[in-house]
Length: 150
Ligand SMILES: C[S@@+](CC[C@H](N)C(=O)[O-])C[C@H]1O[C@@H](n2cnc3c(N)ncnc32)[C@H](O)[C@@H]1O
Image 1 (tube, rainbow, N blue to C red):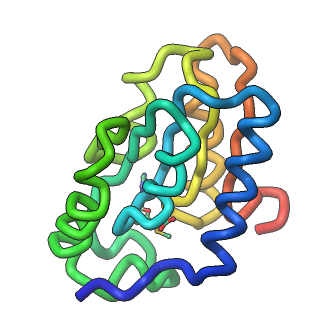
Image 2 (image 1 turned 30 degrees about the vertical axis):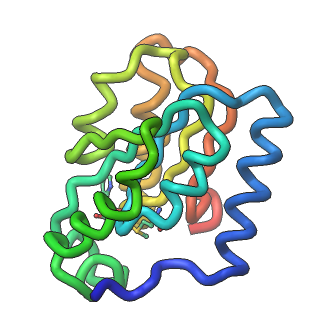
């Protein structure tokens, strides 16, 4: 059994964020960096045409993040698959944000939700990668925590 990652208030918060992004014109391609058991993935899938979850699903990435060690990632990935199986618009890339970045064209994404490795350097790396080599501007990118506050 995989413990829940977000409560109802947090689920509503992510829903509001998606609605706001949709209103700003971000509706098509979303990427979720860090998907865990798919609770956030299905919220994104209800608001975007396509969602790609990027997550290596490997334990031990950060001793300070309960998600890193509270359940075997094999179970967590199975929970993600089960939760998302009814959504034809969800796919996954089972790798790190750094390694997945090369598979996305510059400027091709409408929304990137950064909720993977929360350590400062990792968040900054995740934010740098989606811009690609051209530095093309993106539509909304959200990261938790914000690198300026960590
Ligand atoms: C806080 S959980 C994600 C919660 C999820 N977004 C939700 O809404 O329920 C963090 C996840 O980030 C993943 N992760 C850790 N390092 C990563 C990296 N370098 N790239 C992508 N995902 C990573 C972990 O495997 C873990 O599943």
